[in-house]
Image (cartoon, one colour):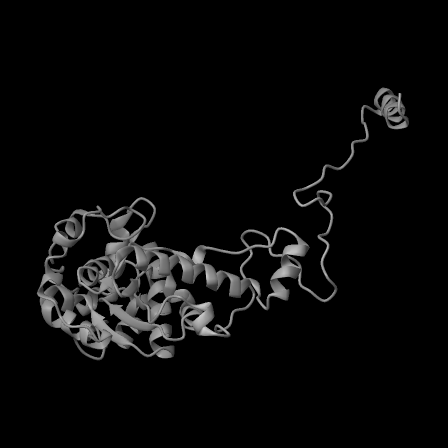
Length: 313
C-alpha cells in the first residue's frame, strides 16, 4: 500500500474524508491553477469575455479579403429583412441572412497560444477580425456576386468596431417610425415582451442606430419609403452603392429559394409573400409613448400632444 493510500485509509476511518490529486485541465495545467504566461502579457481570455481592444488592419491587402462590404444599420423590426431581400435580388449584391458575426470570438486556451499570437503581431481582437472577414468573404465567394450586404441589427451596438475592421465599409441606415418599431417588437413575441418592455428594449437599438448615424457617413432610407414607393427608395440605395437599379429587385420572392428562418431575421407571413406589402398606418403623435419622443424628434417623426417632432418623413 502506498503512502497516499495509507493516509487515505486512516483519514477515511477517522474523518470520512480522503485526499485526491487535483486533475489536469486541458493544456496540462492543474485545474484551478493560474495559467502560465509570459511576464507582462495579459491573461488568456476565457469564453464569454470580450476582447478588450480592436484596431484597423495593419495591411488591408493582407489582412482583409472582403472589399467594400455594405452594412445595413437598423433597429429590430424596422424592415431590414425586406431591404435585405430586395438588395439580395440584385445581380451584383449578395445579402445573406443575419450572420451575427460579431458574436464569433477568439480565445487562447493556453499561455503558449497567446504568446504565439502576439509573436505574429496579433491581438485577440485582430484574430477575431480575421475570422469575421474570412466568414463573410467565404459567403460572398459562394454566391458568385461582387458585393456583400450584411444587416444584423446588433451591429449597431458595435458600429465603431465594424468600421475599424473594414475601413472601406459602406453603411446604409434604415429608419422606421419608433412607435411602429416598438409595436412590431411587442407583436413578434407578446409573451416575452409587454408593450412597455418592447418600447424600452427597442429604444436601445434605436439609440444605437442614432449614435452610428452621428459617427459614420452613409445613406439613410426609411421603411415608409420602401413600402410606399419601393422603386424610388431602392434607386437611391443603388446610386449610393454605385450599382444600376434593377426592376427585378421588387419581386424579391423569385430570387430567393430559402425560406426566412426565425432568429435570423423576419420570418412572418408578410415577408414570405415575396413582394412588397403596404406598411401599417403611422401612429398619431399623441399615441407615441413618452420614452420615444426624443428619437422621434431626431428622426423627423412627430410625437407628443402637439406633435413636437420636426416633421413627417
